[in-house]
Length: 111
Image 1 (cartoon, one colour):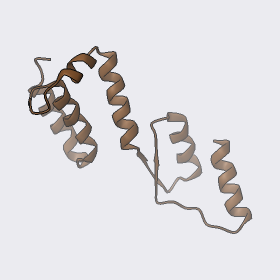
Image 2 (cartoon, helix red, strand yellow):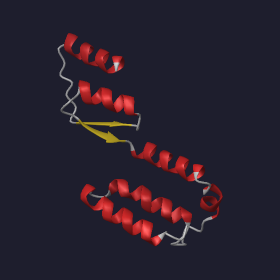
Image 3 (tube, helix red, strand yellow):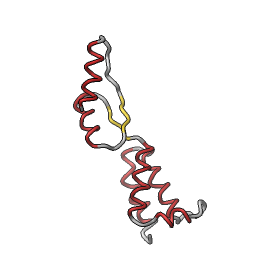
Image 4 (tube, helix red, strand yellow):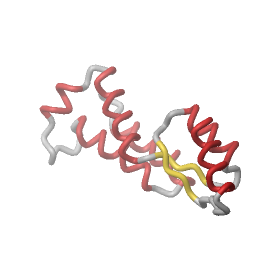
């Protein structure tokens, strides 16, 4: 939080306006909470690269790394396709995500 405060203080000191409409960050909760306090009017968005890294890490934790690596890119029931479908949720309208998630889970209930 001190880094963001320092940034804000420097902009005030130099008579600059720092009021970002959007801020993209990784999924570190501390940074997100600090940004919400310091820039209350900004929309905080998660970084898609870091989102996909989190998904890959979870895939490894669940023991699907080998199945992912061995997946055929054209196999619609593969772990790799499942990963890509979940990753694509970040580009979907917010009000459609729950239904899409349920659809994906239904399609892959055998895994």
